Length: 109
Image (cartoon, one colour):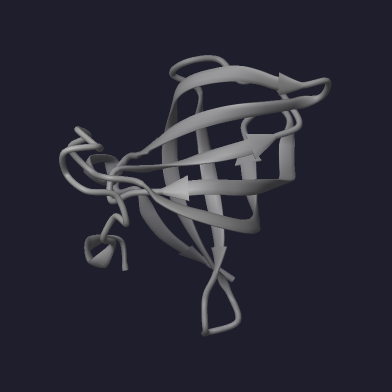
């Protein structure tokens, strides 16, 4: 799925290695100390995802992005926090990088 993403922006306007595609969908993450929580996906690329979350996260924190799959289970994608900035009271924009080199995708039921 991630390899098939194509940006709606021209390469000239978007100098990223993996151009972002806007997406507005709810999903969950599993944070090591704060537990499971609902977040909004803001955009996604082949390299990572930007989410809006209710907690502040530190750079280098690792979280699991939880995605529902057709087999009635969840796929967990291990991610590393690259940046975090406050959007509003109790809401933070968080850039997550997919950790494919660490076996980022795993299945859970």
